[in-house]
Image (cartoon, rainbow, N blue to C red; front, top):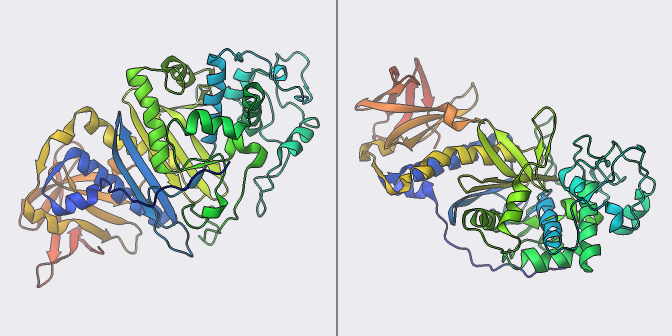
Length: 480
């Protein structure tokens, strides 16, 4: 079903880089968000990512949203926070929530065999002793089903997704890969069947059910159960491939997931996915029954399947990810030309969303790293603590080239002073060195043990403009 076009009104956003450029009276949160922006801009440049939108929310507040780059390399229209991307497998969260709504109404059970609701579910069960394939097994990717409906829809250049009729017809010729409840096997076919169960049990088309019962109540005005073709190249970003050997990204054709929609067909924006995540953190924080019961959401976030190696964990529809001692729930998406991630840290009620119009981008890592940068300052309410930076230090802020060795160094505001960030990097906090002002244009690097290291001396031209800095007997030119 087509959804209404979003408003063309662009809301003013919280832009920490602008705030930091204009004021010496900043907060640790503003400094942290500025670090994220500087880091992302470098990652995009060095990875040649056309466009990206990202956002962070804490409890009931959107603390940051920003768009980077362009919606298409040819058109070069700047991305906005309402730019639409394929969210691919994040679609599975909507499908799983729909299943749980029907479960809570008593219309199905998680231990129901799939065949109870889909009379045409006639895949060949290769393992006679296998338990029945249940709805819960579909949601946890432990059903033993093949990864895909038997069509090459991830193959360029056409991406031939099947119709519903084609998917059902081909199912009779497919075989189970494993016995049910034995192995984790990520399966788009499984979540496609979960969507079919939603339609069969509700008596409505899957797309109409999800719009009426999830998308519309949450006011996700730019979230659709399809890719809006009429907006492709405008509000809908054009997708690009992973980098080729020649370091080029190839424009990808428009596609619709058709029968695979419940697993991979939705589209959305960073604004809507932040809102979708905040709905969840609100339920976790305050309880309630909006869309689903709070306890049902907690049930979905909880681990229901854990591989013996303890590295792969799944909730009901949700991925459960462990990064050192921090647990995230959410999902990532990968479709032709797009990479997306929605990560929720349920304990601290932080939502992190990253959307890119290019394949091969580690958006999940970006989302988790952005969380790491802001987590400690959010917990400490440091947004109420002002840090006074000496006015004279502002002239050193900028980016310096490491030619010919590759990369660059960014001098950024940090803890009321300055810090040097080596770019590009997958771990910005680990590549950040605080600088101590000694006198005039001379600083020293603060070592991890707190002692002072080598000198960093900034060089100015005859007009007093900083043009480079000197470190380890080498000069690094300021480029912006």
